[in-house]
Image (cartoon, rainbow, N blue to C red):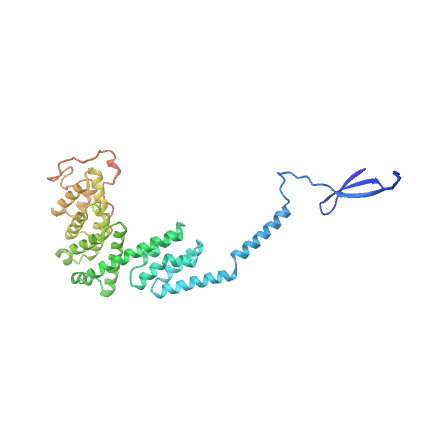
Length: 359
C-alpha cells in the first residue's frame, strides 16, 4: 500500500506499509516515510524564492562596493581640491563646476580629470588662454572618449598655445600694434584690450599649428600685415581674422607665401574681419566651379585685388566661379589656358552666392 502526501514545507513524502514481525504476519506492519526523489529537468527554472535570495545577496555586495561612504568622501575631497587649485590660478569657477559635474556623471575619477585639465591650469598660471583646453575636455567626455586620449589632445593644444605666445607677445609689443589697439579700445582700458587681442592672436596661431602650419609662416604673415593702410585704419581685428584664415587657405600647405600675399592684399584693400573670414570658402568655391588648379585661382584673385574691385564683389565673383572678375565668363590675360581643368560634372553642387558677412 502506497500513499503520497505533501507537508507544509512543500516536500513530498511516500508512505510505505511493510511487514514488521519476524513471522511475516500480515497483521503486523509499520509505517516508513521516505522523501520522494525530485524530478530534475534541464529546462526547470529554480524556484522564485531561491532567485530572490540570490538577488538580495548581489545587491548587498554591490552596495558595499559602490556606495562605500569613505570612498565617496575621498572622491568629493579630491574634486574639491582640484577645483580650489584651478580657481586659485584664475580659471572660471562656473565653467569648472560644470566640468566636474560632467566628470562625475561620466565616471571620470579626480585623478583622470586632473590629467585632462592640468594643461589648462598650467596655461592659466602663465597668463595664457586656457578656454580651448576646457572646451576640448568637455567635448571628449560628452563623446565618452577615454581619459588618456583626451589628455593627449589637451596637452597638444596647450603646447601649441605656449609656442604661439612666443611669437605673438613680441609682435604685440610693436608700436604699430599698440597704437591700433589703443585706437579701437572704445572706452575700455588699453591694457584690457591688449590682453584680449593678444589672447585672440595666440589662439589663432595655435590653431594654425594644429593644422601643421609652421612658425615661420605665422611670423611672415604678422610682419607683412602691418601695411600703412592697415595701421592707418586701425584694422587690428582684420589682421586677427587673417591669421585665423591663413591655415584654411587652399594654397597654404603647398605655397604659404601665396596665401600670405593674398591675405595681406585683402587687408590692404580694406576687407572687414567678416570678409576676410569668407576668403578660404570663396577660394574653394571658385576652384570647384572653374575647375582650375589652386595656383590659377590665386592668380585670378590677385588680379581682382590689384584692380581695386570692392570686397563684396570679389567674394561674389569667387563663389560663382568667376576667377578673374569682370563680366561673367571673363578670364584675365594669363589665365586663358584651360589646361588642368577638370570635368564640368557636379558644378552645381557648390553655392553660387556667399553666406552673410560676420563682422
